Length: 350
Image (cartoon, rainbow, N blue to C red; front, side):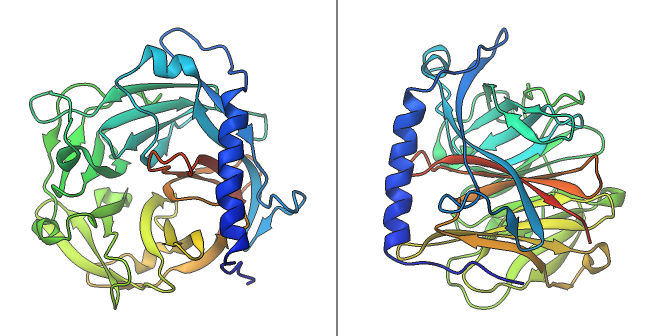
């Protein structure tokens, strides 16, 4: 399988200049008119390969569509307390018309999606936000308490959110299939006790519910740390450790469960010399057991000069023609030189 390797110097400079240019273009774009109680987003379509837009194959995946997302001025004007960016994980609505994302600055974001008859993404017209709340219903304000990095949805409709710095898992009520913004206070969830010992900024970065109600969660791990990464599998009161093979400086950022019981894994990479990189891999159901060493099968890896940023969000849904649509979204770190990208790929399946 061909891998796109890091390209130094010129590609990194091009990435910075392209990001600044896109921000300028989006600043003058005309947003789609929003529905009631929603605010518009500006979007700009992007190819997989800016230098060769006709290229759509990436490892075992096919590129379907992608957009740069930026709030329209009215979004900032009507919701001044909800700063855009920092999106850390996401889940799709069952009908594919919306996604719910959690931001590492203490906010929920719900984005509406438009898709054609084949399920291909055609736009992201609107967004709305609500604060993440604590155990008594007060908004999370301080970074130490609001750094949400992972999420999944349980079979009973509840949302689980993994936080780092103050390492913990909280649950939030949710019953509707339309992924409405969660309301109400959080409830403590019985996470593995060992997560309290994780490094401050390297907590539970990836989480997914498996068949039978088990959960798989992976810690991001420290940059350049030797050896395998850490994780846990199980349920409250019955957790088992797992390890995951790490290589080439990549670290886990998200998991998405498949109908087969397996999962997809998103990993990221970054150095100042080479810029960002991303990987999508597959873990079969049979490998997901307590005390196992997880060895992901690589599906795709990409670096500059391809369209890439700090990808932290992952979602998967069956495609009408067979196989799966995979969505990834990036955390811009609220940095003007980074972008919020939402990309869609097609995978034929294992």
